[in-house]
Amino acid sequence: QILHSVIEYDMSVVHGGSGQGAIERMKKNPEKYHPDIVSTLTDMVISREEMEVKSLRIGELAAEMIIDEDILTRNGLLLMAKGQEITFSALERLRKFAVMNQVKEPILTLVPYLAESEEEEVPGETVET
Image 1 (cartoon, rainbow, N blue to C red):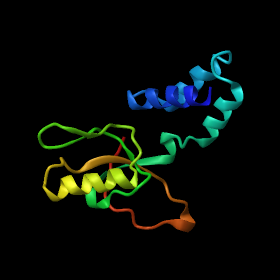
Image 2: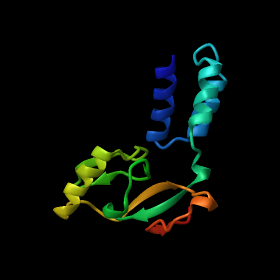
Image 3: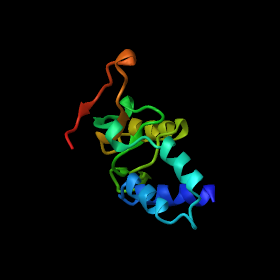
């Protein structure tokens, strides 16, 4: 049931839906999605409201950021889909394509807002949504 709930949430976000909408649908269907699992998933999810959209170049990306648009090579090959979290291995792969000037940049990325006590200069241009 845990895996089913997480996949349902992920599929909603990857296909452009709202994560909050997916959670609300799960809450309305407790026989299919256990309420404790949905509650835990809700606590774990960082909502889009807690993130800002930044337009970043490959060199400015970091692990745990979320891609807010498909990342394509100049030839149209999909490297990462919208909604995916950047992992260290994905970042390394993107950097290899960028060295060969094969990635369309900049890339729209979701970056968590930093608490005032831990604010640093986050590169990139903030995009109004």
